[in-house]
Image 1 (cartoon, rainbow, N blue to C red):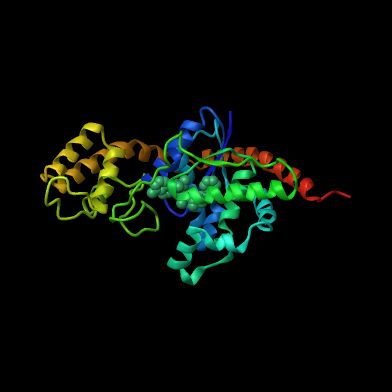
Image 2: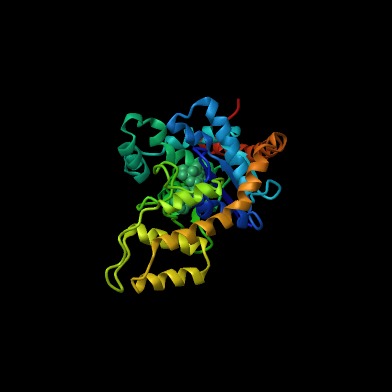
Length: 331
Ligand code: TYM
């Protein structure tokens, strides 16, 4: 049994990218490993959410974890800010994280480019907070999507540096994990890049989207004018739709549209209709469970209390040991 940690920011509802990049693995791993899954609400503060909205968003994401099958009896499911030990470990780890490496992080550069009006210190040290989340439970495996790969590399750097600096073999080096397969990147519907909450209206399909919204979003997905000759490579928007079909539909459907494309007979409208129905078939039962759980305040309270207790026990042990390693001693 290995220790597993992963988190999701509560910046909106969960989408298919979150599901296939992260949650699907959480549900499998909780059966065999010692798992810690959390809602990364400290992380979400980089974008300054309105206090009144934040709690509701956290509640929705919590209901989404539970509705998609994360089991609080099997995994430790908690809200990050219920475990303030994470903040202390982050402060300590910040002393050995260097400005140059933080500035070079791809996600920091991307954020600095897209939100120049809000390049705060929390954005810069985001990878240190993420490393603290992971090493506070001494995790070995971190189920995440492809976009988090570099953060995991930085986590290993920080963990190794701590060990070297204090001449200990204390923190293990955690790996981004997807059952021996490549990390997943689910594309969005707007023709480029990944599915994401902040990638523009209509780019992401949320697990709680009602069927008519899913149909509308998929039908509006960007395509092209179709292949002009057999064997023509697919444009990025079309490749993205085929990736979605390969994830959401059966092999026969994928093969059918692949053949149609190769023979220049493809009708993107048909492909989209099929894709939308296959997504709805998948999300409808999840949606029902999520909505049901979201209205059950008592249950959510019970889950977060239990999770906080278990997560704090593990985190406090690490922080106590780290304090000893770095030379903080009681008088
Ligand atoms: P976040 O909240 O952006 O995304 C949560 C998880 O969903 C995955 N994901 C995707 N996977 C495949 N295709 C996509 N289009 C897609 N979009 C999102 C992400 O890879 C991630 O696994 N920094 C993290 C949250 C975090 C964390 C941690 C993760 C905080 N501390 C510690 C692991 C361990 C983030 O912003 O993920």
